[in-house]
Length: 528
Image 1: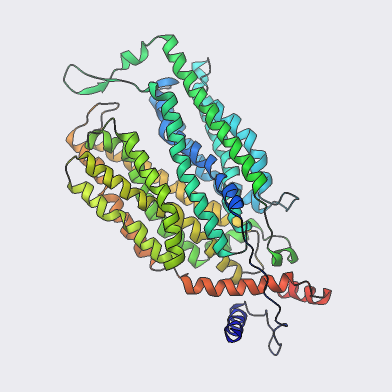
Image 2: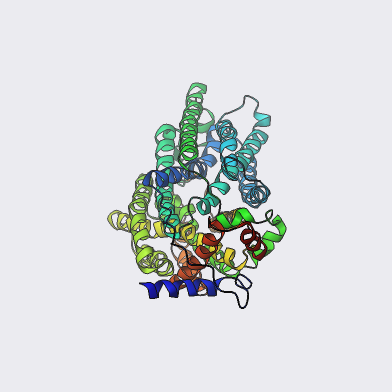
């Protein structure tokens, strides 16, 4: 084994940035390798639970906010569309903004990221609760909902961006970070199931019935909606408030568990460096890092594919397949399948590599999407496709967050003097993900509008049904194939990951060595 250890040391030394070992210098005395930093299952679970608030609230807002504004708060459609669009655009903008603020933060006794999570939580749950409150003054309702929707999105971003960046600070071991990410993705998928189940069970009675008009087409009954009794409407509003209270309680419990169960750790070599680089210089460095651009570009296409399916799934089940009463059950089948297969994908990427997992995991959805496009309406086959889609959704959930730390490690190795950039990496990845969500929403809405979609109808024309089928099948297939082609350019394979790990470990061992004299430490800091 001695020969192997020597080879590793040589490889690591060769990977360090120029100047780490001056010409003619001999490497430092080989020290006994430090014991690997292990995260307990409890630590991983506490970290994973912190991902639930973002997913639970995001799922509820995505599925229920539109119908709440129109049918419960009774906001006119045009102001409601402004609220939804501006809120989504503001949500995307706040990610780099919060990333900038975090990059300027200093380390405290609680860490650099934890204070953002702690102090944003109480304000976020207040804003979330007020989104579901109907003020007594109709003329101020649009402004009310726009204000608190944007405020909540800002505060939940103050929670989610530092939480995402926390992946880099819970352990210095790649394998431990990957394992913690798998725990996190499992909990986040469960969060989407939990959010849908809680909100759906409590406020299911808020659905507006649809009736046949005199011409025989099925349209929603505006008169029935507007002439319902005040007592019934108030009960529905109270149901939304009750659901908001339950979701807010889950948010608080998860934040407390995360705060008490996870300790933010600082890189040993980072403590000897100067202040973090400025945000704009860090942004230039991040956006010029080739592996990062290739990763987010590939996942931008695949994310857009899955968001097209997600955004149109309810309409597709209702109007194209004719399964109006099976939508929630099909969604549950997808999410449960994703939940159970995330640990399998974690084992797969550990055994066969992350790029292989990307190709197999994401492309596995293509045959089933083709089947949906070609088959007639069949409930059993639809459930089979839903379970298979959940397997691919699990890969799409897990792999981006598992591969992003590898990109950051590669960046740290090439730019060892530039630290404090982790929030920039994570915030802009989330920004591009939300950008994909906005694009998918715009494409879907315009396509259905051109096809002649009938608002709140019980059935739709053939052109609308065909458009929905294309949005849920052929368009995602094309985007998935484009994304997989871009992943061919992604340079960090398993061999590159192992080399980066050795080189970074050499930096950490040198920086944290207790035997270093003050002169050695000063020299190391100067070299870095």
